[in-house]
Length: 250
Image (cartoon, rainbow, N blue to C red; front, side, top):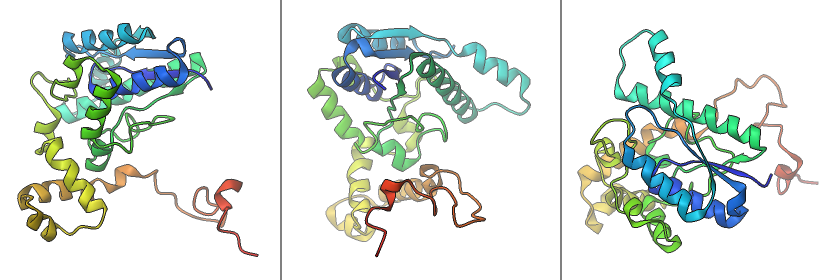
């Protein structure tokens, strides 16, 4: 496939993804989709438009308010910010995959490594693209890449936010800043024990916040568990021929 479909939120992650797609596919082969909900800020739409104009890529605006509110009106139970955010995220992916089917293209993801490790995403929604170019980049690395690529300053410098509730920010939700979390995550993934991190100068309370989110969201980083009933269970025993390389012994 030679066409990219990107959900453009007005944030730095989706902006960097759009810039990379424009370079990789050519601006004429990129469709940016703005997916506002009724509570989305006007600045998010205008920041997304700044990326569209800077790159000269194709664009489409599909409000998801009717989708989200139509479902919620028919669904019982109290509505909180978490539930609303999950419904919005899943509705957005419905639109992106439908646009990709129409364009015969690929949905390109925008989730960074920090979000993925801390579980700050909706399962089977924003972290389920066809390809994710940012998935192995910590948030601070995404900011550095954004500056290198020339992403507009107002996007790079604004506080990251899911933009569903006025004044909400990612870092308030997480209870830790990205600047704090990223080096701690990097050390933990490389086998450094929390006690040693304290000796490095990191605060134990902050380390524990990061560890709790890392360990408590491991399930979100895997496909659903399958009850294995045969020796051809997909992705357990049955693999593509290329997956057997290095496993087969004579």
